Length: 170
Image (tube, one colour):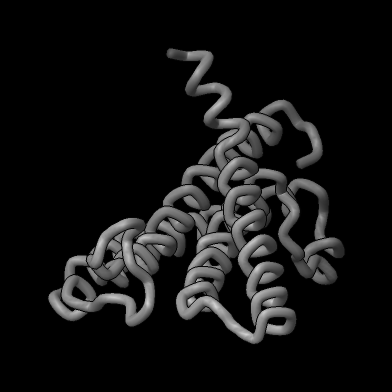
C-alpha cells in the first residue's frame, strides 16, 4: 500500500495531464479531419475538449507547484539578505496555500448549490446512455486542482522549513 501511495504521490499529476492532453489532441485532430475532409463533425467534441482543457489547466497548476516551476518576480526580494529571502519565500507559499484552501472550500460549496447541481451539459452525454453530463464535473476540476495544489504547497513549505533550519538555500 505504501508503495502505491508513493507512486501516486510522484505520478498523479503526470498521469492526469497526459490523459487530458491526449484527449485534447485526439478529439481536436479528429474534429478537423471530420469537418474538412468529410464535411461533417461531432456535436459534442468541442465542449468535451474545453472541459479537458480546464481540467488540464487545474492539474497543471498543481504540477507547477510540485516541480516549483511557477513564474515568480523576485527583483525586490533578491535585494534582501539570504535569510530574509528564505522567510519571504515561505510566507508567500503560506499565502498561496491559504488561497488554494479557500478555492477548495468555495469550489466545493459551489458544487453543492442547487443551480450547479441542476445544470447539465447541452451536448455531452454519458457514454451509451441518454443521460446528460452534469456541469458539476466541470466545477469539480477547481476543487481537485486546488486541493492538489494545496497539498503540493504544504509539501513545499515543509521542505523549505527543513532546508531553512539546516541553513541551506531554498
